[in-house]
Image (cartoon, rainbow, N blue to C red; front, side):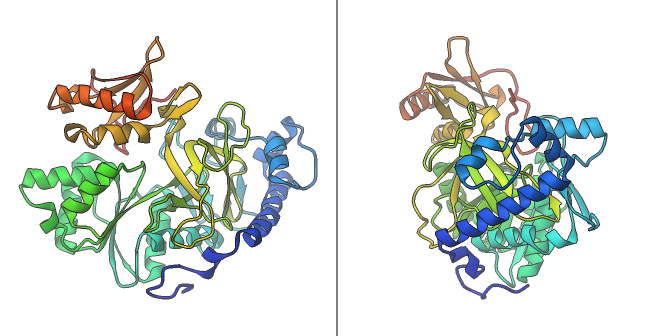
Length: 435
């Protein structure tokens, strides 16, 4: 492929396409994908028929949002259950052969699947991964350690893209379970990567392992220049600690949705996640009404894929809290910038405002004893936000009062931080509480 210039800021020239140009192209591609879905994909044929969507193309974003129904993960689960197959009827593959089948992480206790072909693995999905890794400073000749589990789409695309860029992939044994942290630390020590692709809980586990070994992280990670974290928003306090402890040049967020097969990463400006408009059309909608929301307003991220040869998601509600940034990014890229704040199911709504896990995380991380600890957000019968921590992880009782004061003052919401029964923690290291 070799579409990039070694050492340049941008992976390809399409990242600088003027907005009025990419929007026109985007709309034509969106209508082409929707037309294909209505004509050939059983899942969307059924959905559009039930919603009485009129035939023909959509002429505007407003019309698309009003007439095209949203799809959700529960819809995919129902289709898989009915058909008793990993295929749910969203597979825009045509006569191509399926080359890879990948799973999601099973947010609601049920894994959905995406079907991929060589066409996509050499096309749209690969392009997205290449741009994303270029954003987080993966460069030719680097040794890059990556930890995504093999069944996840991110692992497949990352390894392909790292190799395409001309870097070397390092995949240590193990997955995101805490028990594998020693393996990851040992891989860094012995193999000396320059870039590390992880989740924040794994990074915390690696810091804990350095403490257990009584070694200075900066010494052990002396080869590592950059770290990119997926899975959750990073607080400023956590960023500062990791950069200082590891001696990094920069720490980046990555994020998106494996249900919906879209995502992006931060650039050096750290204004949000760059989402490429030639590959994905993203809307932010009111979670209750479905009404489109303007840039700068939080809502639920809804994605329509613009490439085929894979499972295609049309107006798929990721149920992730996000907002489109209203200002252009200082890096010069012209495509939309999306900031992501956590799962809607893990959030609380107070006086119409969405209080997301990221908001709570930022407050907790300013209390040193609570930095990085898993937590769960619940609502009391009186409407107060209750932030629950595992009692075995809280080393100073006064830390709970400090965090409570921070949340009440910073977020202007009634809240209390407590340490109660042990939390159930997911494989991404986040406390599980799904409504």
